Length: 259
Image (tube, rainbow, N blue to C red; front, side, top):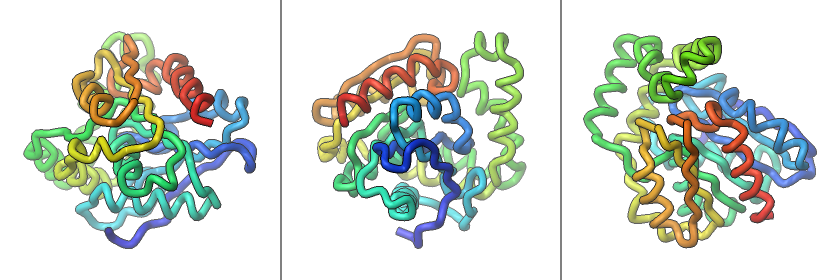
């Protein structure tokens, strides 16, 4: 594990409320979780969103990164906010970080919600190629394709302004941070570790997710003891943004049971 970096974070809600940490997708920043903030704060939760190292306003150490690095950053963030144990909600790369924490830092995790993610996402060559493309041409070169995976075509046609917002989010990610995160996914294989996760776990998949199809969620739900799987219709990869009401309702239901 490299030295943890102090990631950029935003905390909202009562300081004494149960802490819920939101960890985002490759190519995103903490704003992707905006639809979830008010509903959780209104229920008394302390919502902590952060930008993964290399993305948003967080530092950009040189790559490659590993899931161990990203998990170490999150543990340092919990310490910074004085949080002993947190409910963790992660999507895509954030979900991978959550699984790593569930295996390697179980004493810090109260519950896991794993959205649109995978325990092993190949082929490795694809991630190496994407990292090289971004280092050579910048994140703007992958923004259009990224949004095409994040939301369905129907959503894109109905909400072109939101699509532009998301495209700009991807394009604003530093190239080295994006590429180094690709390298973390390239080498990741958590499948054999899933039975070690003891936290109460909810797995949410998008029915139309081309990046981490439902089969990936089924592997996670089948590997984590007593995990629950929910599939949300009309959702691609950034399901929490495209179908916020359904995702938020599932997250809240899981949190209420866990607390």
